[in-house]
Structure formats: structure tokens, C-alpha cells
Length: 237
Ligand code: GLN
Image (tube, rainbow, N blue to C red):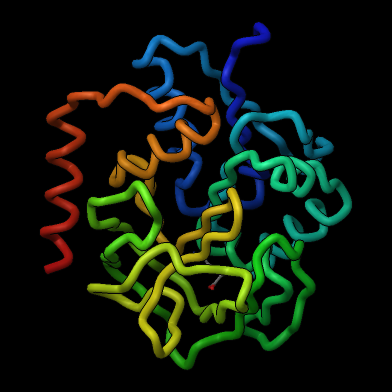
């Protein structure tokens, strides 16, 4: 890896890899390489300390037990928290929202302290939310609807420091009365969307890459990616 290599952190895929969200790191790497950038994925497992020097971090969803192991590890090795304080982009999917909040309550009712990067808390809903999720993004720079597949029991309430990522058009999202989805706080973006998210929402992939590289990226003309995006949006109607 050279000095100019874009380093993409895939954080704890051994415990936060249940839903195929590791695909988000692959999409970031591929879209960077298609712009002629050298990009590599750095896998951080439970055997590794979490480095603070990566350019962008991704975390996937997990079952309640696995997300507890992740919470403990990230608290013990706060490299990603230092990277967030330095403005590095972080993408957190589903259980990772819950892990990065102040605390979350598992489906069994246990309350677990989180990492505290998001001003949010999570408690179980009466019923599990499963199905297609579509939102209108509220993040500056995003214009296309976001779509993904949600599968969670936790409902997330946002505090005053956090903003939602989108307004729900179809599905459950955070499970709050105001029908919003996801969390944005500083450079950290969280969403309940699996998919993987970035394969279905290339605009968000490029948003994260622009943050990671500090440069505006030339658009990519990939008809098959756009076809997948439109097909997945239509599937929710
Ligand atoms: N275990 C969490 C919940 O059910 C997160 C699940 C997930 O990441 N899909 O709310």
C-alpha cells in the first residue's frame, strides 16, 4: 500500500457480517478504482486494534449477541472514534447504528452501553421490521431516493445532536412517529438499509468517497448500476 492508497476499513466483519454489508466496502473500492484511484480494503477483526488512520470506515449489521461483542471491542479500541473526531467518514448499517449510539436494549430487554458517536438510543419495537425501505434523503448533496432492505427489531430515537438521513416513503426506518430513517452526526452516517446499501445507492457511495478523498469525483456512467437502483426502488411500490 502506498502513501496515496485510499484505505477503506471493513470493521469487524467477523461479528458484524451477517447481512452481507461487507459489500459496501467492495463498492467503495470499485468506484474509487474506476476513477483511477488506488484503493484497498483493510479488514479489522476482533483480533485487531482499530486503527485511527484509515480514510473511510464501514460497519455492517449483526444479531444482538454479535453486536455486543462488537460494542465491547470498539469501546476497548477507540481508533474509529478518534477518526470520527478528525472528520473521517464512517458508514454504519443497522446494528452498527445501535452500537454507535449511547445505549441499546436487546430484544431480550438487556441494556448495553454503546460507543457514543451518535446521539441516539435504541429499544425494541413490538414487532420486527422486515422488508423494502425507501426514503427521500435529507443529506445535502443527495438527490436520489435511497432504498434498502430492513430487518431489525430495534427502534432508534434521535437526540438533538443527531439528524435523520432520510424521510420514510415506504417501510419502517427508525420506528419513530415522525417517520424518519437513519442517523447523521458529523462525518458519521447510519442507516437501517442492507442491500448492500451502496450497490443500490451509488450516489451515497460517491458522497462517502468524496468525503474520504476530499475531492469532488467525476460521475460514472454505469447503466447496469442505475438499472439495479431503479429496479430495487420499483420493488418497494
Ligand atoms: N439486532 C438488531 C435488531 O434486531 C440489528 C439487526 C440488524 O443488524 N439487521 O434491531
